[in-house]
Length: 233
Image 1 (tube, rainbow, N blue to C red):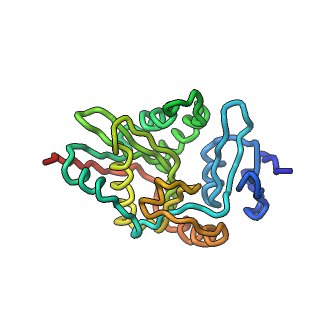
Image 2: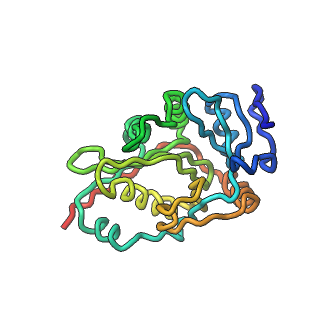
Image 3: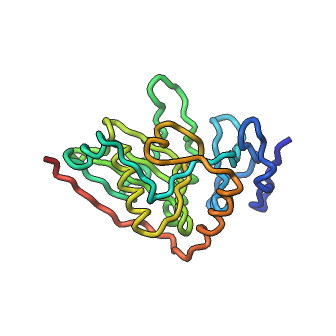
């Protein structure tokens, strides 16, 4: 039996998470900023489909990317140098999360419901949630969003309307996080796509220990100022 959350914003210990499905820890509650921040301080995130109760997860192992370990594949490195594009942060958060909410090709549903959009929109307005946007010819063609607490960043979702658009935003974001002292990026679950960029799986206990060190860093929540334009070759 999984725990049902009450109004206290307290979560069960991570060790109570289920093995199958991997990491399911609790259900219920809401997506207020207070509960979301309480969850992320412990490395817990919500993921559920419309019509389901809110489900909270802490998988084991955990996919993470240490910013210094970023690997840029050769073809993307060429695109970064030669293709005309622009990358901004926190400019159009709502448009980015709406782009992430659009069903993928061949799918009819998305897990990013209006409830999710409202919850993370509230975090954005408080300076905890952030977006990275990729533009081509003044058109938003891709991006991603996530949550930052202290020196920890939690990636949530990305989208692309042109080839490599979300990857360009991702590389700029990781480099920015590295330059500004962030120690770890949570990628949640293993994918080959993230592995190609240098992400690896670590044990949940190791993840929790590292997380506890990073979230207490004295970094005030704020919108990030970033605007990079590559004119292309």
